[in-house]
Amino acid sequence: MLVPIFRFLSIFPLPVLHALGTALGWVIYAISPSYRRRMRENMQGAGFSQHLHAAVAEAGKSVLELPFIWCAPAERVARHATVENWELVEKALQHGRGIVFLTPHLGCFEIVAQQIALRTPLTVMYRPPKRAALKPLIEGARARENLMLAPANMSGVRIFAKCLKKGQPIGLLPDQVPQEGEGVWADFFGRPAYTMTLPAKLAQMGGAEVIITYAERLPGGRGYIVHFVPFTESLDSTSAEQARTINAAMEQLIARSPAQYLWSYNRYKVPRGAPPPTPATPNAAGEQA
Picture 1: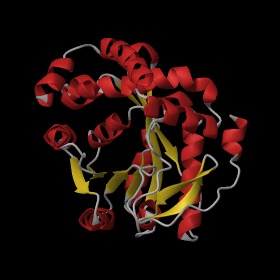
Picture 2: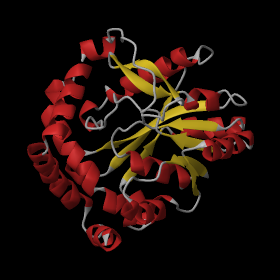
Picture 3: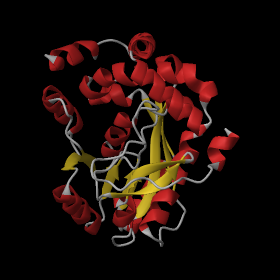
């Protein structure tokens, strides 16, 4: 049932979908106390409370833009995306050591992989949705030409390792809460967040280059700007220090467009079986925001 609905919605212009998404964002915020509380707490803890109203609207846009991103023809979607600093990626590809693209839940993160795959083959980590009805829709939308999916398990890690060994790019969401045993506690906006250790481990395979990327959502449904940002910090440290270093890079990126981060995401949850969190240290980025 969802597939026909999404295909129907994909016909509408992006400005219309974003306008409807703004309304949807406020409806969800009004009727869901848990959603409202989590968004407020996460933004307040990060020091971005002043962006709450904009964040509510942006969250709604992120939902209703999915039919367009997933179901509209690739050529039509591409016309709404402007790619900046692709030269950084080209240079990394020439080095032949592989690329680890890190994309947080910021802006339209779904369009990032598509735009990379239009220019070079890409394999991304994929965690099946909890609702089985969404699986065919999401898998069909994400598995496009030049865009391969790797499951979020050891099989997927092996696929990633093979890609990097061949000098091919891979991509994953570094701020997605991992399962027990696959992460460490590290500060994220001044609070302990269970953070995956996989990105740093992958980056160290053959000296792969790390590039941070996100798609900024433009106002009025005018499209997106896909940004590519160099990651220059050293990951030659412990797993906990590596996780904190990557989290700090994500914080700096989020500070560019704080209203477009998915603050409703339960970033600070404790996975079943994970050790209890350790106290976090004050976060300068959040205090200055």
